[in-house]
Image 1 (cartoon, rainbow, N blue to C red):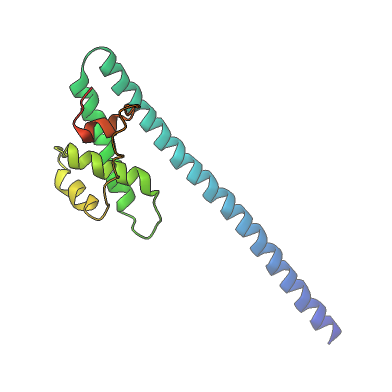
Image 2: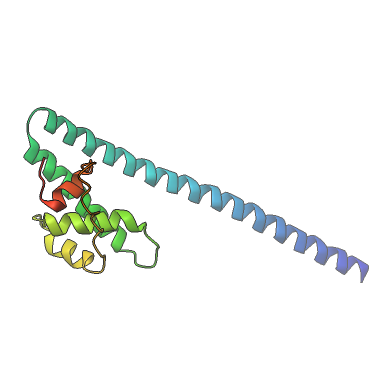
Amino acid sequence: MRRTALHLLGVLTGCAVGLSLGFSAGQRQGFRMGVGALETEVNGTLSIHVEAASCIRVGDTERALSLLDGSIDAAVLSLLAQPSRRHPDTPLRQASLYRRVVPPTGAAAGEVLAALESVPPMTVPAPDPSSPPRSGLVRLARGLGG
């Protein structure tokens, strides 16, 4: 009887250690995969930003806007494709306001507009004559241009 109890205790301890080690290894692997995905995203975004900034500096604003608008639309669709997750409210509201002022024109234009229907636009602050807005989005929404 005592031998059976010790055997059972050994099996249970082995299972607990095995599960613990398996969980730890799986968690590390999942973390590495997540970091890898984030690095890929950052590298892609950095590449787009560098190219857009370069286009602006050489006077090709249409290409820069096309790159940035495509990036905005891809981010909106990516975020809103996963409704079970909580998303930061401000960037989506900014995108909603931007797309109400500057409608999308790319292949995914209809999909972007449909996705943003559920997102209320950002509230544009009331004008303050003593302090003109620095935000390009606020100026764009007010129709102030440059």
